[in-house]
Image 1 (tube, one colour):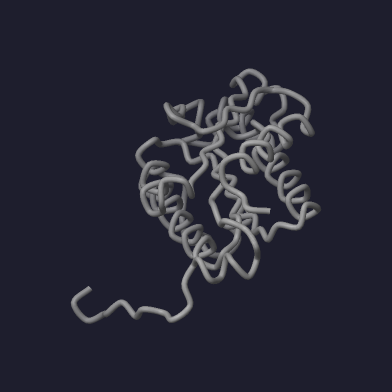
Image 2: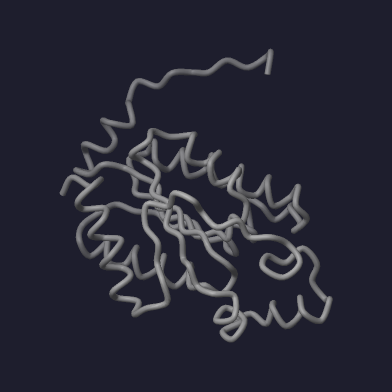
Length: 195
């Protein structure tokens, strides 16, 4: 770090947001595998787009195809995965966007790290509180079955812990997708967004 210097830019986050007529924020969806994060994140982005907001969706599996393809699933790699995602979210936030982030992000410390990278009102933690039994019943990728059979190690909820949020701004329970999207939109429009 001794040989690098931060370069200040002339255009600010506020100026980028103003041209989009919105307040940027990070909507951080966390929950077990199979809890519905990706489905909800996608539906949320569609609704925000329909309402005229500028968004970008970052999904856990998709990021593993590119930026984080060099990482495994041991605890150290999972911490690094979230560290990188948190910084990526901050860059998108600085561009004036509403960033929707859908990652298991099982550890409180890493979610708190992401929260602390940005201003207090710019990070909205959304806890998808789907019980483990329901996630296992859904098992869209067959991962729980593999974890139970010992084919996957360090699997959240089975052989690796999931630390539930203590102070999520929004908690989502198993419910209709449209109702859950509306709950998040309502929070954003009453607390964050400008349009």
